[in-house]
Image (tube, rainbow, N blue to C red):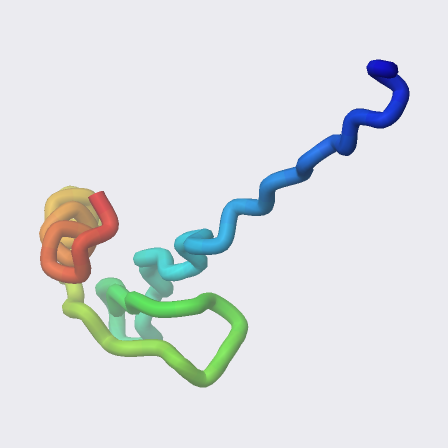
Amino acid sequence: MEANRKIVRKRKINRNNHTVWAESNKKGGYIIYAGVKGTDSVTIAGGANSYSTLDYNIRKAKNKFGLL
């Protein structure tokens, strides 16, 4: 009788594809982006002049967009 059981597979529907990342600028410094990487839905979330402030500004951008 147990052979008649159906296996239920669940998929995670609300998968969060939004991320925050930084890319170096040609003039020096970094630009922080938020959105789906590799698509056109990208927002400039901020910037940083040095590597020491980059980590702090990325954490601020994640908090701003609710990704923490």
